[in-house]
Image (cartoon, rainbow, N blue to C red; front, side, top):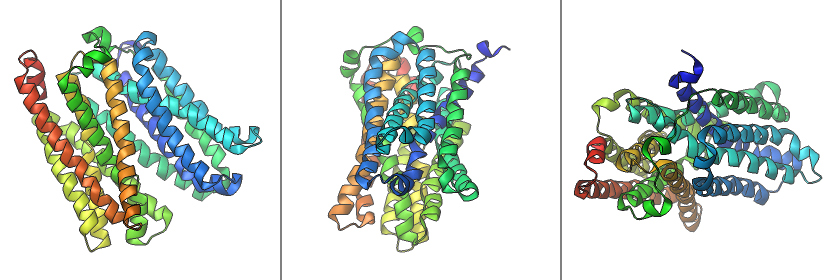
Length: 406
């Protein structure tokens, strides 16, 4: 079958799209100390790079509701990959073209952040619009590729630095750029359906009037906060708890967290036909609470790290699961709904780590005290699931959505 008529290739391209997003979000942080040492970039400006990446992706999430459907999924997906490639490669050479290297870093971050934001909005609805029968499984597998991408970029970059030296980091920046560049070509050839063409589209105002949409937005906020509340602090937690080097901390912290999250998504995809998604999410939320409490209160460092891994495993189903429930509960939501849910998820991704950091600072720098507040997020997710069930069962006009979700 020709690639232009084979939706399996569409899924593969989307998988690589999430690997691209993982590179965009996780490669530059590996070089922050190098930027400080080689270019004299102060810590406060490095912090700005992190914030800028996040803010730009949030802005793209918000604005994409106005242009994605007009320009088309294919055009936006190809553009997203090209911008990501230019931004990643730009890390290696743009700082040397400006008298102030930080300006070159800023330009690079903005370019790949726009690409990453577009990918976050586009990839899930493209997979949802594919003519596949196991939607929940496909969504879970899709999101697992972000986890595998995160593990891969950390391991491959660490290995490259060990073999060729950290001074050659511009080379691997250009090498990472080849993946989105190649995937841009791939996306230009695969078949792509549109949710708007398939199911119609709902306006932003129409979604805002839908009580069920607000429940899904709450679930996304809690999903992002539950995940990043631990993930962003996993390396520091491993270093402080196990008293190991940063390299070992990166492997024992964020790498282990991402691997467990990816594993849970693969397992759910394998058994999705036998499981009820809302019940799996509720059980995972309870397990997430246990993981956070284990990380905070365990007197043994290794068991506390096991709590970190437990959180990673438990949050795996939250983000793709919420997308699947939303697609079933609001079938006319279209691209606009996915964009707004991505925005809600990103707000949670920012709010979760911020809450942990704020509480930890107030407690005199005790990270365990900060993590103690994060168990609130999976508890709120449980509350949101209860409201979803109540609203869905009282809406006589959406019986199909209820049966699909249950």
